[in-house]
Image (cartoon, rainbow, N blue to C red; front, top):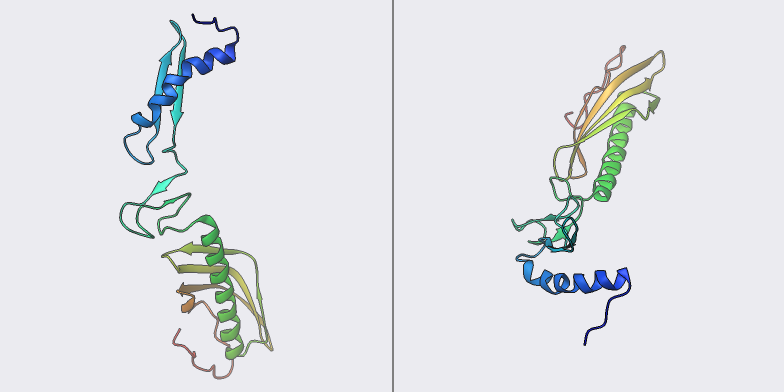
Amino acid sequence: MTKPIRTLGAAVVALATPALLAAPAAADARGAAAKVETRLGDDTRLTLAIGSAGYDSHRREDGYRGGDGYRRDLNQWGQSDREVRDLTRDAVQTCRQAVRQEARYLGYRDIDIDEDRRVRQVGPRGFFVTFDEVEFEGRRRDREARVTCEIRRGDVVSLEGLPRPARGRAPPPRRGW
């Protein structure tokens, strides 16, 4: 003898039970979404979807970073937003330090680097950093320039845009920039 179902919640659970049991069988690959639909009436359906193959998952099949790992929100070099933020901060600090060292070597007394900067990632650990306004203060006058650094693996590879002192002999660049 069967008991009549008196509540809507019990009815939903009773109708969803076959879908819950069939969902693992419907999933044919790891990471694939399984979807089972049950018809409740003429114009009513109950849909149960298990798994996610949405925008936030990324599965690597090519052996990069441990094979078929499951990570979220990766850029084209396999880095998360947090990793990119840390690498960008380090690249900007390295570029600031290189600009200050080279400007002091050229004879400038004070260097003011504004916060207007553009950073473009060009590799897993490569960046182009552009400071829009860098003020170089010398003995007689101040100069403003746009300075661009190229950073590879944490080291400055090229530094462009440093103004040469107007009077006197300027020392040659130290690192061939």
